[in-house]
Amino acid sequence: MEANIMSQVDVAIIGAGWYGLVAARTYLRLRPSTRLIIIDSDNTVGGVWSKDRLYPNLVAQVRHGLFNYSDTPMPRNGGNAKDPKVTGEMIHNYLRGYAEDHDLLRRIRFNTFVTDAKKFDGGWRLSLKGTDEVIETEKLMVATGVTSIPSLPGLDLSASSLPIIHSRDLGTHYQEIGDEAIKEVVVVGAAKSAYDAVYLLLKMGKKVTWAIRREGGGPLSIMPYKVLNTINAIAFASTRLMSHLSPSILNTEGRLYKAFHKTRPGRWCIGRFWDFLDLNSSIHAGYSKGDHVAQLKPEIDRQSVFWASSGLGIVTLPDFWPTLHGPNLTIRRDVVDEIKGKTVKFESSEPINADYMIMCTGWGDHSGIFDAQHKAMIGLPTYGSEVEVFSEGGDIDWKTYYETADKSVNEKLPFLAKPPNQKYTKASDPALQKKWNLYRRVVPVSMAAKGDRSLAILGQIHTVQTPLVSEVQSLWAILYLLGEIELPDVDTMAKEVSLWNTWTRKRYLNQGLKHTYSLYDFISYIDTIFRDLKLDSHRKSNFVSELLSPYEPQDFNGFVDEYLRKREASKT
Image 1 (cartoon, rainbow, N blue to C red):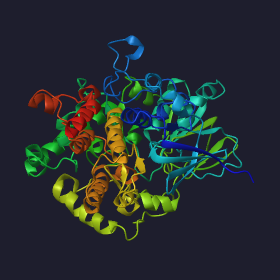
Image 2: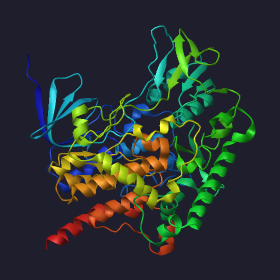
Image 3: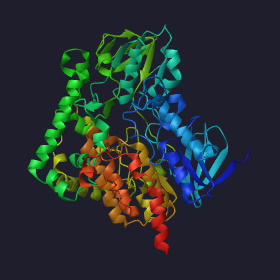
Image 4: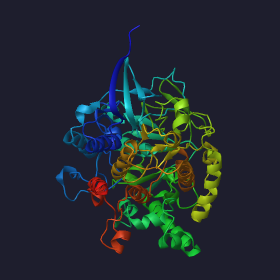
């Protein structure tokens, strides 16, 4: 039997998307001589924005200027200074250019899938798919995100002749679907990717049957690109005012916090603000027009765009809702039972014949490179039918921490203590929550408690400004790995983790059960990280601008240099 081929590096980063690329660049800025590699299963950079995952009409849910790194502006769409759109192609080209400009491409191992990561005394051993090569790395940074491993329903397809793909592969199959022989397409699922796929198919002239199960979170909430056709939704979500109108466990001090969250008039104002946004979104979507689109109304009794229980979308294309209201779309609140030939049978409605099926059924275990033992050691959730347990045994009494956190979140943020009524509540069972027991969403608490700084988990936080958050989190994570961040004691870290996970469950309901959702709350997270770095995150010139002016990535341009200057000054 041949011995494994062994490669040794100082740092391995898994993932070449927003987080992986900026982590690599930042690490090399701090330690230029580091033997660093990036490993990615795709054939280009970009992660969710890689070349093979692009298709026409794929547009980010932000305006231009809010979706780029702080020191690298993104060119306008086609050079048009008046076009606010950020297309998928723009993002891919931007990330590819970023990798080229910072000499990262030569460090990337494309088409390389890590199947297994195991701890050993000198760091981590990575096994690769289809090869005997093993990579040993002293430090490991996992930047795979939450949209890397497709989840598919367990249908028996032995009698099916229907072409079936996951939404992840829509880009590589776009031309195939465009064939004139493909006339009837079934889309399964209610994620944002389903809305995008349905819109794309309708624009291609296809007839679409959209199947959304009755159980679960139901259709997601969708806001207009501009509220009252004047205020950009994501720009407003990027203001400090929004960080007070959205109750955050990271923002529980100060006069505005007390005014909004510790008084009944303040909570009343919050409620009416979100009622208004909800009404505006409902009118914009046209749920009350009496046609099939009524079945896409979120199944929650109040403030759906606030709770975002099934997720939140932003309409960036002006003909989105008119297209969905068109006659070529049929919506079924049903589940696909079986497929025979090209006949799709449902649990409770008539079968149909189709030419293609697209599964928009979410994502699986993106931490699957770790086995159950390592997940327990790191503090990562299990998947499948198994209910989450406090798997780190006697090291930390997580059950007690979470019981305390539940009471603390209710006390600090009373608005969240009375959740709305949802049509189906089974999926909201707190016992089913996937908990990432990671301090600052990065650090495995039990490992850090033992002085082991060999692993950092990146990107386990979902916000409206991914690029900016990836920069800030990456710097903090790298400083942690290098021993330049002083961690608090285990008790403090466990309290922080349990408060965060409890808060995201109460704040974002079903989405908070699945992963570390923090949609409207990125400013509070950046504030927290900057305090750790002893940097000032308040970058505006006056109080009014600080409260009402949107925070853009460019506002934080140079923050890494600021940290380095402070570090050097502290040595003298």
